[in-house]
Length: 138
Image 1 (cartoon, one colour):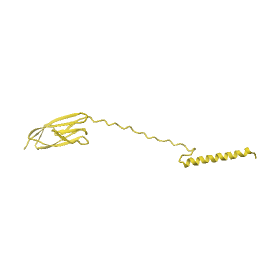
Image 2 (cartoon, helix red, strand yellow):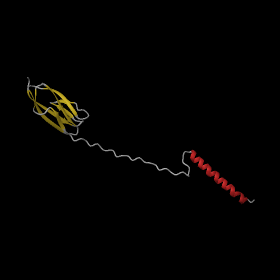
Image 3 (cartoon, one colour):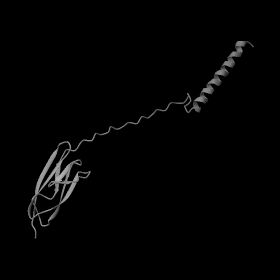
Image 4 (cartoon, helix red, strand yellow):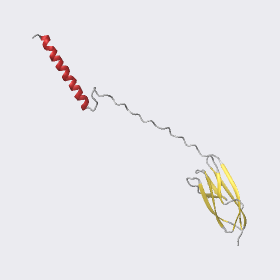
């Protein structure tokens, strides 16, 4: 047997062992073997985040109704505005909740009682309302 005829089977065995070694090493490292089909990767799509639109400044008196006639000396003034507003009723500061609602108890005098509600914010917006409640004692 000649030297060239011995090199061929030895070379084939060497290549086969090397291919087997690479396949085992690839699987052991957690990577798929070269013969596996690659799996598509799914990229999550992020939804755009809406930019909050600031509420338009407003002032609304919910109660009492203008020119109401009442027979009790105390009443509650209720209203609504934007949540970050500063509110006063007849010059007295009133708390505004996270929804923009506010209320304050007032003591009335006999006859017409003007009630002035002022709301403002730090951007310079201001609204005011004046209503009159008439108290008639019994």
